[in-house]
Length: 426
Image (cartoon, rainbow, N blue to C red; front, side, top):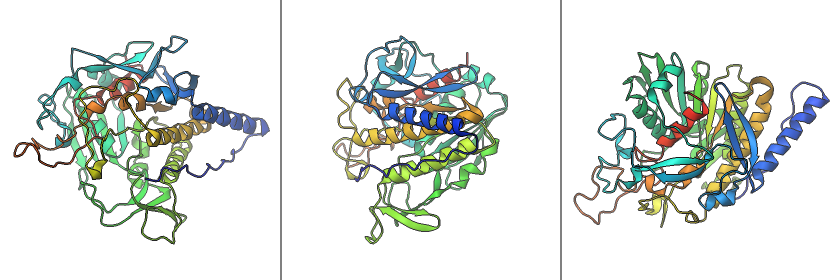
């Protein structure tokens, strides 16, 4: 697909303040972008009990991420987002039998996946040991709070993991769902905690004509300058937010801005300017971060980075499969140009958002950079086991493979381990 570079981002004007404030903002944005684009840089978050500051640290670069890992940071500090998967004989914290919140497409063991080795790995950051998620401590720390997970089906995958981990302590009750069950809400009565899942695959307003199998009857219509009200209208009720987007942008779409069509990606009308989907992705992120940083309501916000798929010999719609049973070894990730572009755009826009937010609410905007740890786990997807015993009638049956979402339990559980570490709940 067309992975060309998007147009250069427009410069924002600094609001208010004197010349010194303007100069400082420009310098900070420039520094952040230079370090993020530089192949020898990455964005690292350090956390305390109340804040997480975005710090740019030199070390593991994009090339090293593709190589499947690197060396211990030179300063010996804990690096939550860079490390390696190590064998772990203790296995997962829950199973397909103990958790009722695993939905069929992610319930790999129930669906007949024959191997179980993918369950016996844990994420080991460089420079430290990372504690496992502890549901009891999390629930105690979050009494009376409202968590929201906003985005596409990867967020739905994530919320199932979170609910399974928390249900070991207290079973939540579902108190809301929309007609399609894509947006839902659960309540933990004993701790008065609400967890919401909000369907907003582009974060901006979208007209979607597609079924659950990805079959579309018309081109997507994306309004890049209007945020999806499905999440913005509830914003003031959230205390903690995990938000992400990206997976839907490569689809054929028509782009709207200021009430008019401004371009399209692979659309039928050749009189409309062809734009890369990275352009739309960047626009969506920028609009989202502008809303978050300008809103008077300031929840703690985790932006979760790109979750790479692991299709081989094709893609979702062209017979791609994922048959690996162990994590990647160094050098096995292959050509990841498209993934790296999306990841780079996210980090660039996040860095600018942090700079603009620093004056009002330093520390509440956090990068949940799960890209590297997810990239290393081609074995963690359902593959053909997104449905119940797909080869029961014929071992050669042609079935749809899912090499994007994650088996539960599975590698995605580590995302919650990291969140707990970033919040310094102990």
